Amino acid sequence: MPTLVSRIVEPRFPATAIGLEKGIAAVVHLERAGGKTCTIRRAATFSLSDSIVRPSFDEPNILAPQQLAEILKELATSAGLLRQKRWSLSLPADTARTLVFTLDSQAQSGSELQDILKWKMERGFGTSLDELSISREKLQKDPQGRDRYLAVGVNRAVLAEYEAVINSLNWRVGLVLPRQLGESRWLMRNGDEGDSLLVSSSDHGFTAVVLRHKHPLIVRTVNCNDDECEDEFYRLLLFYRDRNPAGANEVSSLSRMMVIGNSLSRDRAEMIVRETMGIDLTPLEAEDLGLTLPGRDLSFDVVAAPAGLATLSL
Image (cartoon, rainbow, N blue to C red; front, side, top):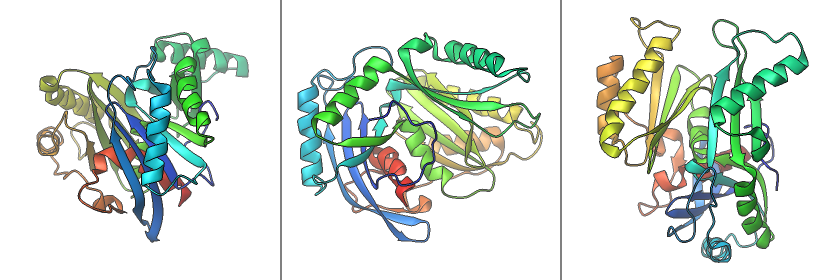
């Protein structure tokens, strides 16, 4: 199992994926249904207690590895996927840290570039890079022509915990990404016009991802209580609006919004966008994103991340 992929988009990824998050585990198998639409043909979910998985960036995550392995095996069995050996894996949001950063000036040499990138990532991740497994990808330049990068960091010891559980089942994982990047896949594969916004809730607040031309423009994790989420979302929209190349007093290019989780309700998110940006954006549902769920019992919020990774097989 690789540490982390070096690119978000690669060919020949599996159509099966595992999703792990605090309180829930899921497995999914995706199939193309025609055009850009797809359907979840097989899926199963299981509620996880904190005594099994407790997501954290710098502390042990898997407290009962054998029990987690048994749960994943049972999920694969109940979904009819036990024979599958190749999977993608969506990590809990709190397990990884994701950065989008801009270089203020052009490096004069390769060694200087590496020094700048290291400084930026150490500052952003808040820990020594020697402790992390890092995936880094160069993004499109900003409007001023400056270089931009996406970096995802996971503690090596934490990643090894998940690797050990997967290996104990004789499975292989070729793609490992944090939950919010898996969820972002739905916005990346649907529509090129305007910016797209993902708001993904967690126990500690939410992570917002703004995409432009299918590339991350802003990735920001906000730690706050539930009663503070609306104010923090408002501030984040002001940050986006004031840095939008169109200008703070012109029409925003924000055209789509996806809201996952319960920290911020879809209705309130829609209202705050209207008040802040002066536009009407109804949060997208699974069918708006080209995904057919097998029934009402399966929540899109639960499977959005693993199913998003599985779209890379289509």
